[in-house]
Image (cartoon, rainbow over the protein chains, first blue to last red):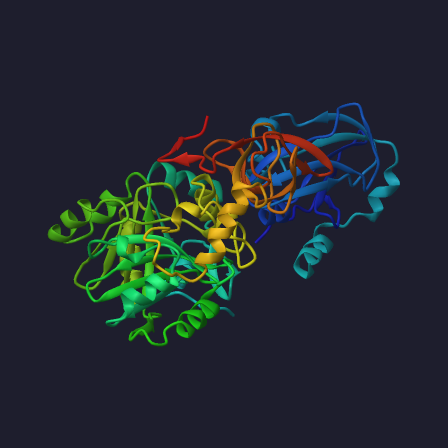
Amino acid sequence: MSNFPDDLKYAASHEWVRVDDNGVATVGISDHAQDALGDIVFVELPEPGSTVNAKDEVAVVESVKAASDVYSPVSGEVTAVNEELLDAPETVNSSPYENGWFYKVKLSDESGLEELMDAEAYSDHCENE
Amino acid sequence: MGQKTPLYQKHLDAGGKMVDFAGWDMPIHYGSQLEEHNQVRTAAGVFDVSHMTITDVDGPGANAFLRRLLANDVDRLDEVGRALYSAMLRPDGGVIDDLIVYRMEWGYRVVSNCATREKVLDWMKQQTEGFGLQLKERPDLAILAVHGPEAIDKVCALLPADDASAVQALGNFRGIQLPSWFVARTGYTGEKGLELIMPNEDAPAFWDQLMGAGVKPIGLGARDTLRLEAGMNLYGHDMDESISPIAANMASTIAWEPEERDFIGRDAVSMQRESQANGRLPELVGLVLEQRGVLREGQKVVTENGEGVITSGSFSPTLKHSIALARIPVNSDSCQVEMRGKLVPVRKVRPNFVRFGKKVFE
């Protein structure tokens, strides 16, 4: 059974977002997504300093099974990327919501957050997929 | 609900993630495909391959029948217990299936793929006329494949002493009939190991004994990456009825001598061999991508002689980069793979990447 932390927002394309008090959003992929992908062997991350828009393809995850695009759930400037994933992509499998984060964004517009799902809605979404 | 092997409950108990595989409920992995792969390369793992099709061929005409049916020649099996890999061809040379045939005391035992079961049984039946033999499918038998550098020792420690020493003495592609099991040094991983064919009712207890001895369960996911590293073809991917065995790196498994042996497909594959020599039929090669990214089945390969296609591709857990099998124009030196809209240069190698835990190409 996948884990859906209550303090996160989720996109239908299986990314999660955690927004802190300074308007910085951390983005990763959900436990459900990593489980469906299987062992992750490569991660491509966005360029720090680049601007991303919600629903843009901004990263790629390759598992033993398949390559999968990661769509940004939020818009803004990329302030940090998790370079640890380049050498240890399996961290996404073992810790999807903590050590396996992908990148951080200084939000340019918080309105997009309303389109994201809460844990309960996302859990239903995964079940019905 | 799919068909279940006698080990279905054992897979669930071991945390197997079950998937449909050609109508069977089989474990794709038990947590991590990568860990299972490495377990087989460094220690010992067990695969349940009871979904594969076993057909016993028995009767005075069995030898002549198989010499007609198979592209390889069962006369090469000069002792009881020996095993042979072969293609079964259509008259036009298309590959109906690939299989292992064992010489038994009473005849021959054929182990063929699961997904091809019906058409293989139908085809074999159609060819029996005039030979004097019986075909008997053996759904009452299970197959466990135990592979890895420690596999043979671990299995032998569980066998009665006399059986253990006989199994230890087996050479590669040789097997032995024990009182109720047939045990052979065959497999699909590029590691040493055994395939044990046993009555269904024996399988769960033996599985438990293997677990107790530290042998880990291995799913179909790792089975695929292990065989790919070993450069072994997978039916339905690297070859099928539309592909000549010559274009699937299987020419060396065809017994061309003696010339008078008239096996099904002989004329076609003889011509296809000439076509390839003249550059008109592609070949199956190995591809290596040493940078980031994963080669995948179906990706286009661009060479100076034209286009080809990746037939199997994955991340190689042993080599830590991607490898693939690809069917491309012969004598191509420059290969690029179209990955996510970009052409990425790859290196062409012989289609054999890892044996006994070690890289084997330059």
